[in-house]
Length: 317
Length: 307
Image (cartoon, rainbow over the protein chains, first blue to last red):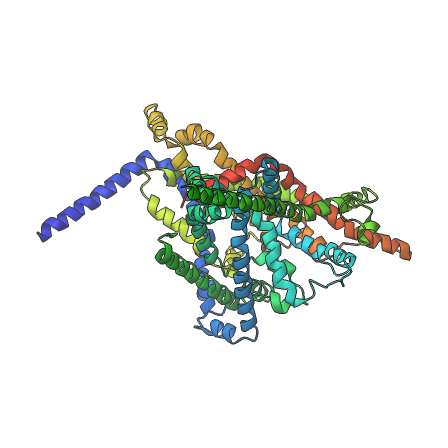
């Protein structure tokens, strides 16, 4: 019995290798082809992953990554005990939660309302104009924010003065930073994010709407009882993805909007990693801070996925 | 009997009135949204064409005032912008070609039903979507390859987006009939010939979409230059734009003594230079945009189907 099983396994194994040999012979070009991206993935994704060991080391340029001495969790300890740890963590979490709470539902509401707009031309125009900001680069976007909010010459302050109010130094006041960050992101991204919902809404079976109309539902009720349940899977999928990137606040935008005055509200983990890593060349410490960020991210993604699985039977993986 | 009819009619009337209010509110809301999206963009355009002094004093709000091409004349003389422009065009064209090549090299094998190591390679690719080495380890790899301060740093470290690869793979799998492969195999075509003669020509829409994703990415890329590039001559447009817009460091061209009026005029001009540079830096994307808009929408959909 035992022997037969073993024999069976060896036969299967040799069959596998035979099949692989045939596949290699017939489709060697495919194997050659896949080698290019595979090498790229290894060099630019997996080799850096092996570099994560730096988080537990103190980097010595002469010894390289592998040769540098281990120091255990000292880098992490230093981060947790550092003066700015609390502020940075709070800024990262609060900017992200704020972005999620504001930025996630607005495109959905926008799509729902746009879907009921009766003027076809206006609908097309609104849609097209709403995508446009997405194509503006982060640098130009931040430049526009700074120009529009300038305390003397900015268009927003000019408008405020026209209305008889005092000008506000938006970029120089730490308290405004998060609002500026979140709402300009909404402006830039909501049209684009709504595309997916608009197309999901276009796919809703119109018979459901007809039935609802016969039952006397008004448009608000149709939104609530027909449209929303129909696009629920899309919403949940995107929500999980968003929660997964909760800690991954866009480095570029925060970095570009940062100035000495608003630093207390604008320093987040990714900008801190850049500052201590590339500016101060404190490689080990910077890697540790970055690792802390990615691990939390990963945990959030898995947790969000599990939660959604339990609550709604929908999940990403 | 009659009572029931009036009740139904009431419900009907109420629904009509609710719907009417809804439509009006919706219309107003959408017009407001239209203004909110359009005004900042419109403002940049009119400010770039207006008299610098008028913009400075806040007289330009809805329409251009004292139309002049002065700020465009200034931007033509602003050398760095054009160095950046040249570099960015190169990075965008060459980078996108590299992107497409590597993306197809991965998407095509993974789309073949009988490719044996499909699962493991897929797993290798997917892991990188959720976990990476982070800033410093990536930087050390690029530096170790002696790529920092070369054009390669702008194109190779971001040569592949796994997300885009998944979009292409989904298209190869779902939109190209299996019977075509059988037919071409019967005709004696190998996997490569099948790719070049059948798959790629049939996949033009999806290739257009991801080419555009990659293009926009390269055009707007600022991060790679910040981390890997120091050489002035290699910097892309976005990094010069940062100097101009964010750091406010317009290099003063002419020296010598200036009268207060001239100083004032220069200050105004530096301000409108920003608007014209925004236009110059964004126009290529906005020109392409209306043509490809429908493809972008399709692309988003293809991406969402994959899950």
